[in-house]
Length: 149
Ligand code: IDP
Ligand code: MG
Image (cartoon, rainbow, N blue to C red; front, side):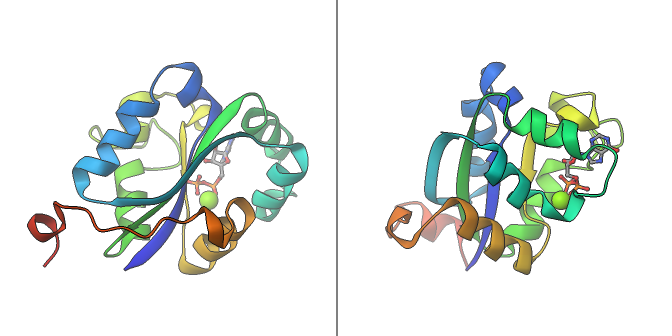
């Protein structure tokens, strides 16, 4: 099974959308294997968004992600990385289809309310930034036989 890193950005928490967004992933059949709420430090934000360091929006991006608590999690499932990216929708909520998380729950790119890894390499790197081995719980969900083939 593939693992991906998902982060509910500060707007999700402030707007009371934690449960709603997590429900979408649960309802899809993805399995949560690690999860925590935390305040992202500037140092962690800079490492997480290192690829965007030269972009004009970098400072506001780091400012937003450190502006309040986030909920970070690892989701597991078949092709979890692309499944989550499709569920999130486009980076710009105005370009995201209705039915996607970003398309249903926001209007501005700088405040799109969820992050998901964009590749296997990013997933591995981002999971490593936020979680250590002991944060993972290994368990079987009783609905797996009704979801997985
Ligand atoms: P992604 O989150 O869909 O992978 P990235 O290009 O990796 O998109 O950008 C990371 C985050 O930076 C986006 O989710 C968004 O919050 C923010 N961002 C990207 N492009 C812009 C922009 O043009 N203006 C403001 N914020 C942006
Ligand atoms: Mg990205």
